[in-house]
Length: 268
Image 1 (cartoon, rainbow, N blue to C red):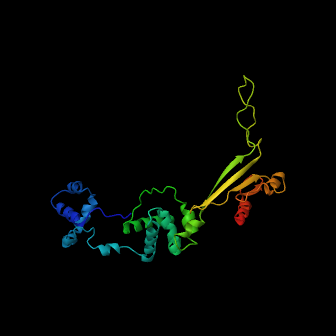
Image 2: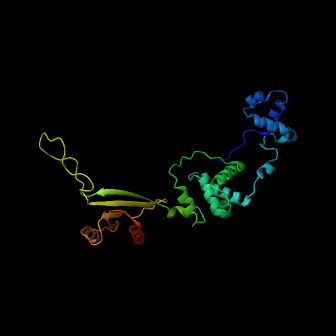
Image 3: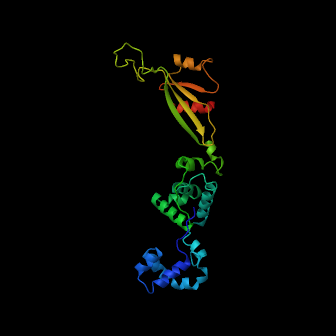
């Protein structure tokens, strides 16, 4: 959202006039400002007096103030266009880290010549110059900034289709032979003696569910514990076991490593 200055020219002129006959503490209490603001208004009293007609303005020379200390106008315009594009639907969030990553895209030499703290300081001045301010965003489930801005935007020139290439994946372990914690026994037995744990119940698999940021869901991916050529692998690859809507594969620890993931991507 845009940040507006607090005091108009008529308020500044009123404070400068009041400072002539009243202590600065009284003026600051009356107007609710810091004493440094009163000192600054007193210094520019002549300019404020000459522009009484612009009393509802925030600056005596608005055009001169807007152009103040803008050393990289092209970069600033690109960042402003980016903020307007992302925030036009009021759904996606923009942070200072997003702006720094976009600086690296728009002007790599500008970012390489400065440390991270210097970039943060420049970003703060950029926000102040353009009347922008950070506010709490209700979109708490925003996508990771580094992956979204640095990874996705490097391949897309527009902002609309980038989410179709961004995926989120969750894994759930399922123990096939895991027995119940309850059993029927003779009266007087206090504890169940059924064996629990993954070491005793090795029949297990991992189910991976993956979907894109646009809502597209990929087929479920199930990885069983086993090695190629074993009994489990023969059962998994059997035509009677497989389902066309689900991808099955075996791995020694029922986990999705680099080779398994690559094979799954090639299949889908």
